[in-house]
Amino acid sequence: MQTSKMPATTQPILATDRLILRPRTIEDLDHVIAMNSDPEVMRHIAPVGTAFMSREAVAKRSFTHVDRGLGYWSISPRESPGALLGYVALFPGAPATAQIELSYRFETRHWGRDYTTEAASRLLQHGFGPLDLTEVVILTHPLNAASLRLAERLGFQRESDRCSWLMGDPHFLCAFFRLGRAGWLATHDAAAAPVVTPPVA
Image (tube, rainbow, N blue to C red; front, side):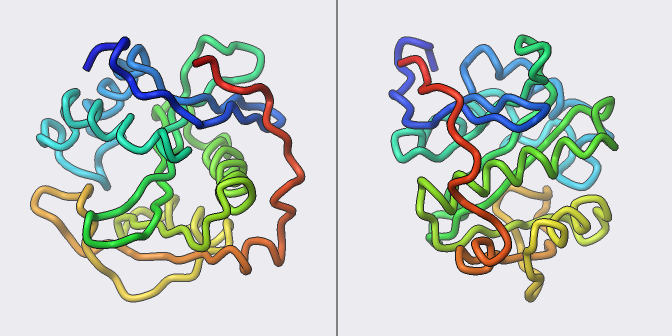
């Protein structure tokens, strides 16, 4: 996939107190593949070298739904916009469902700083606000204690475990969480945080 062939995105640039969330670019793929090659990052996701975590597969997923305002946001610290910490994403789940999944991944050196909660909360605010999503789901490894705690902090409710099309090789039963728009708005203001600036076409 060449930069010139990337579809136009309607994803905005978002911000939190500490972070900038901007639409993923082709240039960001090296950072993603580096995370996908770290056994510690991938411990609860999939084995390193799995085909659907390859550069080609990641590139295809990264830009498929950007015309709908969905996709992946690369995360940088406000004080150093050129540095990449990880990403958060909203994208359609398995082709047979209409569910929108929340996904997130950070380099291990940035773990423990609550960046994931901050970035995911901001993206959910955008999802339930301007994108007007009715529901978002999370699928995570049932032994991934940090991810389980994150889902609970964000207000997601756990339901019956199920497989994810993007996790495991072979697939395994994941902890499955749901959060509806009404549940989010009961404790959050979807319009509170403004978009920083429109993305560059």
